[in-house]
Length: 182
Image 1 (cartoon, rainbow, N blue to C red):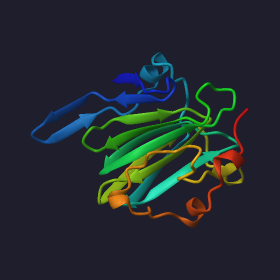
Image 2: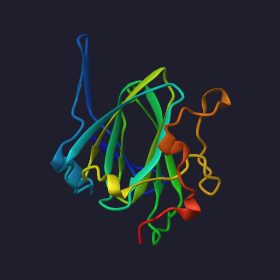
Image 3: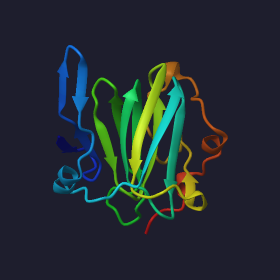
């Protein structure tokens, strides 16, 4: 595996070593010791699988209580994946990182606790699988508006059309009013 920092040094691209032949491929997506050696010493407690149609935007989600680190990958299709630093003392507070994750590039994104996360489905179908470092905690669940002008995320919207959103995502709060980490 190769671990590469993004424009935010704590958000890491993880490129698994892939073995491909005429039958298909094999790749190791997680190995505790390799992650620890790369400076990601977290235990994962939950796996999630999300399936979305083209134009769906999910996020920007986070848990203010029991903050989750996430290891995100795409099993089918392609997404634009985003993480926003919500740690008030961080020099990157309010800054975002966006990466294309796809079944073709097989790249994973490590997002540490203290970040909001969201993604936009670029392909007709996108299956996103992610591990979390904390269990889902509904009482701590929060959502920031995907198109908040203070964040100015450059979402690659399909034909410039408004994304498909859940009620929760459509009613997300403004970044300026969001609960953040101290």
